[in-house]
Image: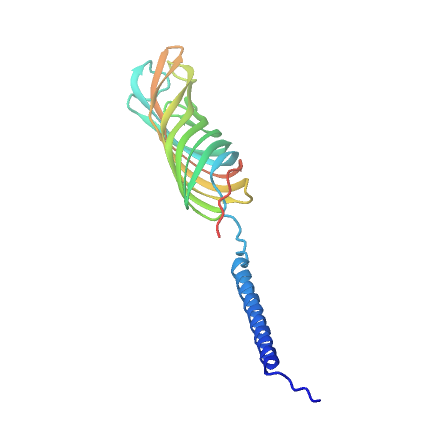
Length: 267
């Protein structure tokens, strides 16, 4: 007896094959979608860029260099005549010396612009002597000395990475001494007096951030001062002068330590 396959069995086999193909296609599609989703979710991290130098913060430091003083004294016509300089006559002398001191300040940075305040105190060795020999050799000797200089200024600058180019301006004051000694003639004597002269200053400079804390730089400044009245007492009375450092100029190298401030990053 011969058994023939049923048509229903063939249909069932075809149905199973179609279902298996559909399942395989679905699995492949799901895997591709998952891979695309992973690619979208996990992207390459951006390249690291070094942080910008941050000029914001307090700093302290020191400076050293040279200073030039242009000194002027004028007999204002009052007092005793010792010193042998007629009323209204004056002398002017220019001299230079070493200077050095300390600075303290604060900077605030907005983008590339930097603003700040700074105070300095410096010791000077600017001095000079003028000998008046009209009435004989070494008849009288005028001497002057500027020995302490202080400033309080505002600063404004433009930063290019670790470089800062700035200008400054504000108050300046100097301790100034005048003396005279008259050793010949009828009226002899000697005397001296020291005054603090007030004035203004302007300057410009460049600084470079060697590390995030250490800064070096170069700076030039100009200052002018008002006159003071000096009464130089001698044996015959007072010899009165109006005197002032007409101007003081100085150039220095600087080194400062900046205390840490928040880092400015960029990507």
